[in-house]
Image (tube, rainbow, N blue to C red; front, side, top):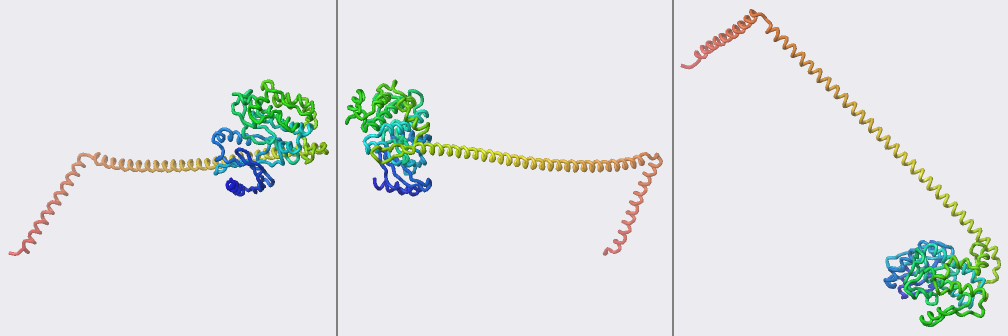
Length: 437
């Protein structure tokens, strides 16, 4: 186990985290405190080793947890900064670090004053109400899953058993969570996870104020029996709390209120008024009363309101700036597209002109060729006409001329033949003389 922890620390160092210590461990995960170079602050890292977690949990619950962590964003829900899914089948959930949790504070001081508990409880209710509005049920609400920051803010964490609960009621069958916080109907076949969250909230507030759980028993059967009877009241418990406890810890889920109705309960009116419509910064002091007389509350609230307004203004300015940049980018893209279009049109125009010019040249060459052919044909026709004229002249002579021509031709031929014969005889004579006897 120690070897695996050292390997994990080594991997985290490569990701830019300096591990300081281990904050704690649960059934399927352990949490480390580390310094982050990227975020420039101390963070908490939840390490999930998928090799050690049963396959049914990995397949059923882990996807829900990771999906919920990616989408939730609320001031009283722990902020997830990064999620790493590593090749070695480890998942690192990097979260903002907190100072302590409600369980540690309740154990340390025995009980939390109603005034302080009410303020923290309102913050917790706002976080759970946010989840329910987004159709998410936590199903593991308990004191040690409610963290406290150094400035006294509540931060809800651990969505290992979280589920998407769409519709009302959306019944579930999986029994999950700590036995001291589980609603009685969870032991039956079907239950509404949102109503079971309300029961767990009632147990949390009871334990904060009294320092012990409303239903106790070493075994599960004892707890089930305890839930069917009236829970124990503390002698130190304020009477005004009892009606509020009974309101949330109703055994019948159909009559049990939803979170929004709990927020509107008269018992919490004073707590909401102290927060002036916003969640108050409650300093966590290490003394027996846990919270010292709320000195500087007004200044703290005003400071918080101012910070929130500045943050909202900054976000709005950034959003407007982003919109302007996007608008400029779109205009730039349009200009570039128009420029490309113009260039294409220019190229097309040049190409059309070139083709037109080529066609005109071809047409001109063709016309010249046709003209040349016509001239040649004309010359041939003229020559033919000339020959025809000559023939007509010959054929058009009188019979006497024709006869004369024929006789002249015959005379010339006869004369040539006679001359040839004479030359032949003379040659024979010459050669005959020379020839040997």
